[in-house]
Length: 300
Image (cartoon, rainbow, N blue to C red; front, side):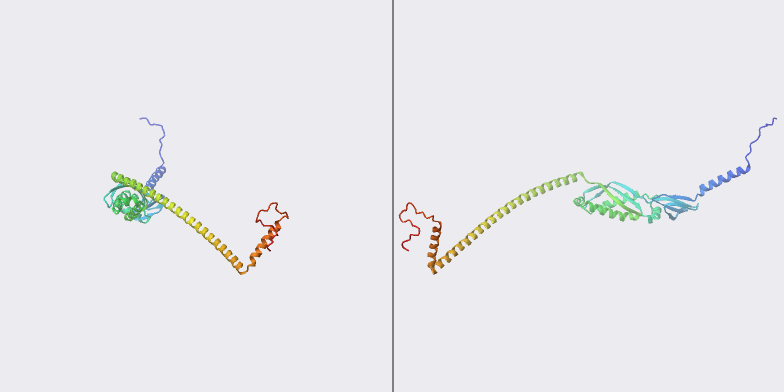
């Protein structure tokens, strides 16, 4: 038998012991790791043997090994409801598509985790509740009112849905209504009615315009007639005033002449004086019978 001269490699016992200890510690840390992280927009639900024992906020959480942490989202979520069906009070079928944005109330995380969802997703509850609310609200309106009062309908749906979803610990952020529609036959009837109404309003507006124009013409004619009457009255009043003044002047003159006959003679002398002042001293070359000769009044 040959004995090999090659040297044997042996691992020191202390190295093996350190390796084993390190491995055991690593496995223990993996199993008993006490550090957890709760991301932004979430809450950490702490359970102990399946029972909720606490809620951790965002950040680092240190838990004993017999407890478990589950991340629960409180971010805004959305639920799309396509072609929700309802019926108006006058039995017209109506459909709508909506998007509901919601989130879990932070003070009800434990309740929602225990009863409805382990991650904060309540989409199925929101869709069912929205369809129920839509049917209940549309049944309160007639089809024309549902179209004319769409903003009020949306507000009623929002209020009812907030109350409904509060049972599940959810709070409604907003509701977007889209594709609000009735049956094709009803929409055709509505369009026809709108067209007729527009034609009627157009005819009424045209009639009002004609009436307004006629009233304007009448007003202008009346204004012109009043202006002419006012001018005529003014002229008549002016003429009457002048006539009265002239009559009064004649009356005064007549009274003066009646009281003093020398006034007439004085007037005649004044006239003769004016003529004499204007005479250039030349006698007329031809004197016809009966013509007066200046300053040769023999009778006087």
